[in-house]
Length: 124
Image 1 (cartoon, rainbow, N blue to C red):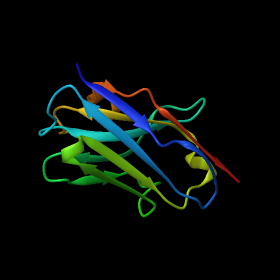
Image 2 (cartoon, helix red, strand yellow):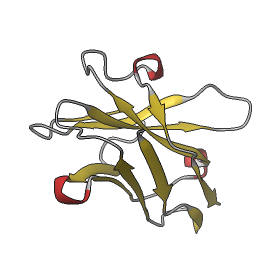
Image 3 (cartoon, helix red, strand yellow):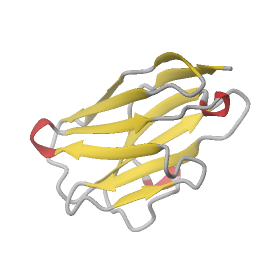
Image 4 (tube, helix red, strand yellow):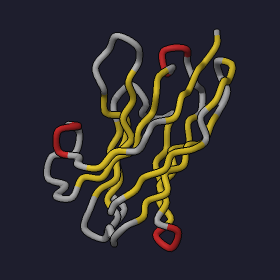
């Protein structure tokens, strides 16, 4: 059974940094993509970033390009999201998820396993 466990959220001032981790277990993920999504209160879940396990191609939402970096450690089955220059509008619960057939990358509908989420709060 696939399990995803996020960590690294917290409270930070605007302009600060956080690094989120997502540890994946339960099977091999060589052909998948891993994505980060976020959901703020009263808003829909939105795409943040994704990375392909094989090849390492990365994808970003326009709102985080140049500030966030997604990476992976294949040996640890872990995906990271380094978040720099954080803004109050980045405040949300952040989720990692698995996309088993990564043709469509940015839609949450194509991700079939999700972590429990980790809260990120950016104060102004």
